[in-house]
Image 1 (tube, rainbow, N blue to C red):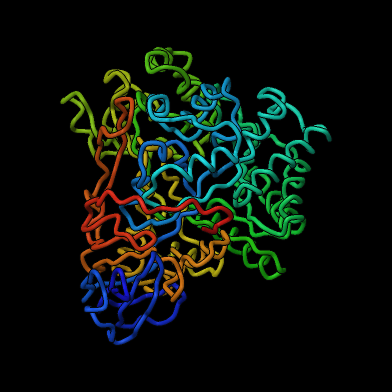
Image 2 (image 1 turned 90 degrees about the vertical axis):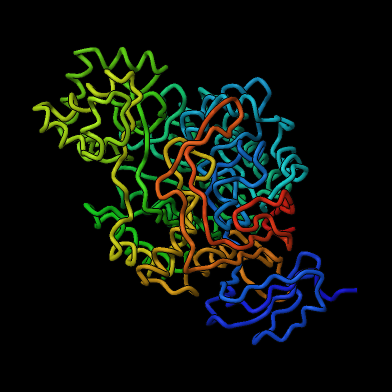
Length: 574
């Protein structure tokens, strides 16, 4: 009998622990790493299959703690884009959003909610979701039985629990009663019993900051939840001594928000993921302020991780196919509600145009996208507008002698809202991103995988990080990169025997050619591969020779093998 199922021979092993790289062999047996031998001493005759990794990097598969593949995993076992870019384990149920627990009569409303707040195509959910569950434990059972090309862990999202217990309108309008709070904590505890890894919530208030809203334009349930309700959920984790929290909280009072994170960490005693930090060329004070707080709060004994969104990309969108990008601005939110035909009529209305001009002139910049003047015209339908391609809206306004608002919306209206625009990319300056990632508390991630599928492709972040930060710019070592991509998120989430290459660990492995690793195409492209006839933007990867999950190859040279060796990781464990 062969000693190994697979032998990865002669590669540069970067084990994820920050140990210096070394040349060596990796033997895999029964889905686990059976042997790691420096200097290539394992014998190919002892293996059923040998993979020649000469000149290649051998590293642990990437772990993405912030995804929204809750719908897509129903029809895509590899949760692409992530599966194409070396991600071997994901966490679902982020931001407090999800589909369990869910009473059958609320399923339609839940899909409508997700079609706006996370911009998951409604027709795809309608056609692709199986709905073989009601409770959260049943949701985990469904995930367990679903063929998977990656490992899956799930937060217990708070919004469905609140709606289940209080009803939608009550959950949005008042704190929970003591009895409701007791019921919700019991549901959370039962969900954790079943294998949930903790809980998640988004708290963006009910005013200007609430940038991710419900289908009807109102704040999400968790946006307005009371401090005491969040703390009650945190105490459930403290009593159990397990789990972690993903929290997105933002208000005009930064100091008050950070005090609440500190209080929650003190009361729950569990790790907290702070979402999310990116760098902006025009406002480095934002990430620097967060880094100062991260240093202070962790030195005080708390365990708060800074999840970073490092991918160098803006948002691609048209006013015909968009959702929620402008929810932080009252006037733009109203304009972008409704069907494309309804949006078109609003943008033709002189009174609404005047209101948009007034908003712009008073400096009310959309939170997510930045100023409209900096948007670039990406594609047009009418050849008379081709001269504007690649120009900013501000440049178009000067060329046409128009106000920025009219310059942008005149083109969009004439093209039946099908003009595509591109917002300025964040994370472009190497010195700023280097500051962000030099913090010992900054974790690579926030792919938002499965969400905003028509606007972004940031699920490709591992490939961008390795090619940019490590190979091209050189402000991060290969050892540090793999620690931030794998071991650090594994530690935060409580994964056992994953995130590092060590004997006895699960064989989640990427083998790649660093020199030839790249995103392809350079700009995202549109593909029609979602259920319900829907489309999305994608970027593939070149340079990953093999991607392995639990010892089985899922992708070879970018081609899917059809293997589905992924596991449901209850509590982060097999």
